[in-house]
Image 1 (tube, rainbow over the protein chains, first blue to last red):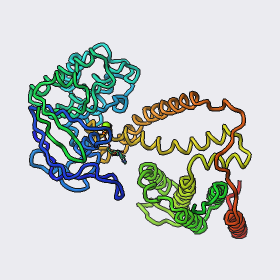
Image 2 (image 1 turned 45 degrees about the vertical axis):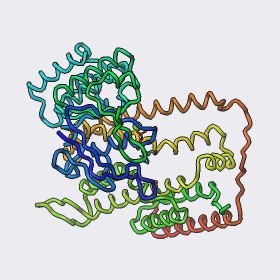
Image 3 (image 1 turned 30 degrees about the vertical axis):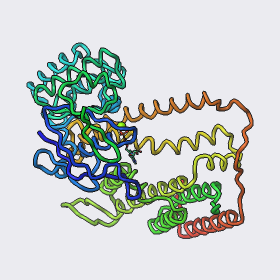
Image 4 (image 1 turned 180 degrees about the vertical axis):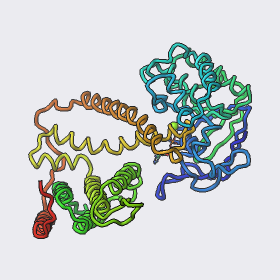
Length: 221
Length: 250
Ligand SMILES: Nc1ncnc2c1ncn2[C@@H]1O[C@H](COP(=O)(O)OP(=O)(O)O)[C@@H](O)[C@H]1O
Ligand SMILES: [Mg+2]
């Protein structure tokens, strides 16, 4: 899959300055993109545009050859997963198991096959035995793994991770490092917003990007 | 410096408008009150369109309630019949219109408060002899309305990032999704308010019994004139409603 930004510009309202200014860039699966930039450079805004939570002021976003403007945010989520900087914001349910099942229950897609998939995911994210726990009362690393499991329950092609190391310890960091490497090794794509150089140095196939002055630059190293 | 209207006058506007909205039970009177509220907002240059955008979820819930009301209350003339029964009757329509107008007036008058910054509002309340702690709480609670709607919106976004298009869900499922959102939204707000409480403590809130203000409020001639005019208009409204027998009786 390809996420293509084409002359993309965005500002929050008429009077505000452009946060993104005429950005053209293509993200491909099979690569990890490390996106850096100062506070307020527009990294989170770019993520929200790709997810369809914000609409471009000018320009377009393409998923492969389809203009994304035609695709609703809920539909985009089937191919793109977003990990919030603060996983508290993406957990709702009263148990870990319900957290994984409720979207499929709502869509009447909770088949036996899906249920099996979910128990495999619980194993993979070291959450087996946690089924009855209250998500918001778990540790930072556990919440992050649960949030990742909810994303992976949809078999997404792309991951966008916003500062994934800000609320976890070193053990959590090595988990997410190998998770991202495996995901991209298996044909996925990842955009990682992070300033943690040690963490980034352990990722493979990384393209370093800098968002500055509303534009994306590739950093050669 | 530009002449600003005293926050006490704005408080009076809010109190009068909401009181009239609660007391009136007539579509025409309430529409006039709503227009007056909108005109006041326009004069104070509050951003009505922005507020409507921010409150659109809340407003759509109100409209939903109004529709349910209009269909469930029967009486008066039948407007839309189905078979032998009425789908919509004049009484249901009147009831739901009154409900919508009443809520709109309350929202619009609440908007008046947004034209004043929190500090000024606290000072205004103090001048009305409200204890400082209460005045502070009042202004903080107003400040928390946008926090609440922001928290709610973030969660709504997070739901759509689960691959759920809320707009496409059936009504019972929509209600289930909203139920999922309520408790994390409230706990998010409580967590934010705990941070606020801690930062107030470390800054020594209530450490000194008597506070002074850098800029003291003073009512000017314009303020007194506005108070007089608005009291007169409100009294005229009440008298008119009493005469026409359209005052809510308890
Ligand atoms: N909801 C919003 N309304 C208005 N301006 C915003 C909003 N969110 C972010 N901004 C502004 O857009 C710019 C980019 O923000 P953001 O994308 O969060 O930056 P980053 O994630 O790189 O730190 C900042 O100047 C910020 O103040
Ligand atoms: Mg950010």
